[in-house]
Amino acid sequence: MALTANKGEWSELYVLFKLLGEKKIHAGDGKLNKLRVFYPVLSIIRDELERHLEYFIEKDIVIITENGNEISRINVHNFLEQSKVLFSYIQQGSKGDGAFEIPAIDNFLNQIHCKKVKAKSHDKADIHIVIHDYHTGMEPNLGFSIKSDAGSAPTLLNASKPTTFVFEIEGNSFDEYTINTINSISGKRKMQDRVNAIVEKGAKLKFINIPNSIFENNLRMIDSYLPEIVGWMMADSYLMRDMNIKKAVDRIRKENPLNYNLTNGHDYYGYKIKSLMVCIALGMLPATRWNGKYEATGGYIVVKSDGDVICFHIYDRNLLEDYLFCNTKFETPKSSRYEMGQIYKRGDKYFFNLILQIRFI
Image (cartoon, rainbow, N blue to C red; front, side, top):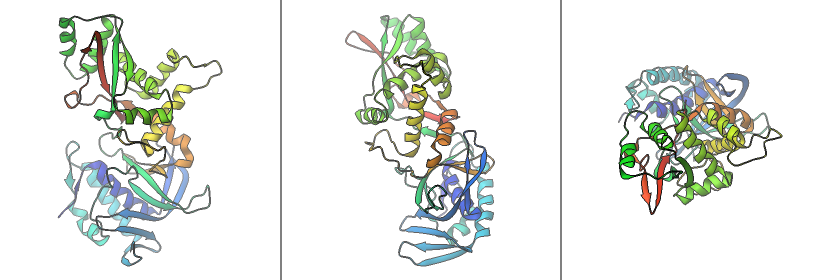
């Protein structure tokens, strides 16, 4: 049966082909420019349906089972050629983000014993690579998370019920007519319009809590005030109609709602948001208790729109932080799927929910 996948999932397989064909991976900067620094690739490990396979780079690519049995030996050039074929189909893809087949590579997939496209969904590491590490002189097996710019912009953090932020509406009370009027605002940017309508009535959104205790505690592990910082930035971004995360940090830095001592130029807010984004990228999941450890122990791999593949090694954390910080935005998920964007009353107080979702620009 032919494999089907969307553009992002096919990109994971493209990385496998590309790295085995080129035998190395280049580092990149925050603007996705390829740097001269590169890491030699020694082998790649894939978790197939029924077994683990390791692709050793010798004169040929030697495919070994977890029991040490050689099952195939493929010319390196074949991987490079197949990567070009695969990427051309990824670029064409299907309309939208739907799954599609690529029959042109079926024979090659059979040759390399590839039975699936995507890594396990609960694993932040999409690919495991043994590289020669110039920093340590060692040859570690490192897990990398993969994001692709070949299709529509991928998400860094998906919306879900656990990523709900609750805000109290302070400064004014509302009658039933006003509540219904604001809640009925529709259109493409209805959430931004509703937040602005609340403020125009002389009120404001004050972050109260994250109902999901696991996600809230995950954030507080990174920084004890991180829920308050993210909550302020979300409400402000909807009010300002500007969802860019870097610009949101510029605004919270200027307003300084947590009253940090900024007289010496310490970038409290930028540092904390960058730390959050690295943790999301490499290990932290909203609904899973996080122990502070990264699953993607190597870092981040990006498939660029032109087919180049670059990495942000965990040793180059500053480059990874810059990439995530400069290339992401808050995004409004579909309100029909979540209890968000509606004024509601509990006791004598009014509340409003927003759902956190972060997407690459």
